[in-house]
Every structure is written in structure tokens, then in C-alpha cells.
Image (cartoon, rainbow, N blue to C red; front, side, top):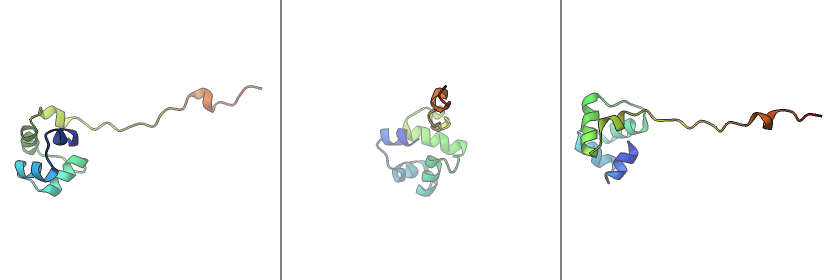
Length: 77
């Protein structure tokens, strides 16, 4: 959601005001600490001019890089 908000040229405060929610709630939704209600999600999508499904997408977490097996295996004698 941060990307969509920044692309729309809006601050958290401005987006919150457009959607009728508090800036604090906007920050919590954007950080993933709280979920938006369906109605709020729709208002956010309209304010950001993006499909609702984009905002509903789950955040992907970065996985640590895999260490190749041969790098951890003892060397043959």
C-alpha cells in the first residue's frame, strides 16, 4: 500500500483524510498491524485510483538466501 500511496503523491495524513480515518489507523493498516474493513479498503482503493485487489495482496516476506549444500558439507579426504 505504501507504494500505491507514494505513487499517488499522498502522505499518510492526506490519504487518511480522504478516506475518513485517523492518521494512526492509516499507519497501522499500511504497516500490517491492523486490517482495513472492506468499506475502508474500498475507499483506499478509490483514493489511490488502484484496484482493490492490489491493496488486498498479502505482503511477501523475504526469505534468507539458501546456502548451497556443498558449501556446508565437509570436504572429502
